[in-house]
Image (tube, rainbow, N blue to C red; front, side, top):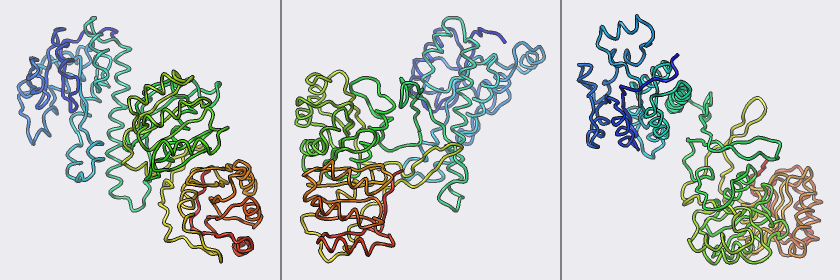
Amino acid sequence: MPDLVPVRNALISVSDKMGLADFAIGLQNAGVTIYSTGGTRKHLEESGVSVEDVADYTGFPEMMDGRVKTLHPKIFGGILGIRDRDDHVDSMEEHDMVPFDLVVVNLYPFAATAARPGATREECVEQIDIGGPSLVRAAAKNHSHVAICTSSEQYGDLLEQIESGGSTLAQRRKLAGEAFEHTASYDRAIADYMQGETLTGEFPSSLHFSLKRKAQLRYGENPHQRAALYVDPSVRSVNLVSARQLNGKELSYNNLLDLDAALEIVRGFAQPAASVIKHNNPCGAATDAKIARACRKALAGDPLSAFGSVLGFNRTVDMETAEMLCEPGLFIEAIVAPDFEAGAVGLLTTKPRWKENVRLMQVGRLDDGPAAFQRRFISGGMLIQDADRLTSVPLQWKTVTETQVADELWDDVAFAWEMVRHVKSNAIVLAKDTSLIGVGAGQMSRVDSVEIAIDKAGDRASGSVLASDAFFPFPDSIESAADAGVVAVIQPGGSRRDSEVIDACNKHGLPLVLTGRRHFKH
């Protein structure tokens, strides 16, 4: 295998033309003869690039709306021919085949078309590229002699190599690997689309993922663990991985987990909302008419735990909110929000002690919903389920006690029920004034979760609403809640001892709302 291969002839046929003109001009200036087709040829000629028409070269015209244009022996012979085999070289010369040293191809936008709302089946099928993948695979197979370029991100390095004398073997091998990954992802998207049309069940019979590494992280959950961040191109909703970082140090593995949890909470509320995350559980959250007031209430939920926390907002972080966050005594690791006012960014990055360090993550408008499925890897495989997006429907709730919920408590009841789904099970939350004031998370005993939540709330537990992610198996937790001054309870129900729990609530004049739905979060 030759190490350095001079590039004299290039075949270019792309769907995504970003950066192509500058790249082609660079090739032309390096003495490369460019062959091209259809729309790509027209784009290059309009950019002042001299181009040889593939149809003139093959003697065979494009036809069928471009479906047939590069599928010709003179094209594939010029790509697949092994240059140091005499019989291959003789065949190429006999049939006047140009030896292509570089192939530049990217494929029709099938995945983007299929993901577009309202896209018809005919539109999607038309975006199934035939010639493109064949060209890519042919060039990648013959990477000993041919460089294959499938992304505009590769143009810069490739052009630099060509200008220095040619493509290197190491570079061609790397490009070939990326090319096969490109075609594999493309075919996977088509297969998933076609399979989705024919399956009778909601879950596909097989799952395949093509994730691209975005960052090598400093370490994982602990310094002795390596870690990296990968992008899932199939996710179209607003998410943390596609967010823009406006300030701060590199995000850590734990930062990313906590920011994702913070964003997940606030996107579930229509009114302005703020969340405070510590170790992947909410230690504070609140809603209010103004985002600054929601933030203050959320931080007050557990001020001790809020130190060094991660914040999430579902509204733009404005000057009032930023000024509040700059008050003495606060330390914030990271903030995720749809946007930040310019003045707020200025304050957050210059005024507090943690100014250079705070990570500010701008995700954009939260209009679109989150992903519909949740995937979790376990040893030997993966679990997939519908994400817990079930909207609470208060009209389906049932108050089963003699005492009814006071009208002024319903906002807190609804807030508590929305929050409990975001806490690790066994989960108990206490809410007052649509803010989180006590959390008991991840305990083996629900009684322990109740005691922890009450202890966290302290005196504020009096007048609060308690929510449990699953039923109470015994009335002992009700006794603890009543002693702490809880004024209403919401839980799924469904225990064999529901009647005992209801009796305990009636004894204390405590209204009990059953939802019929549980919200385990393991």
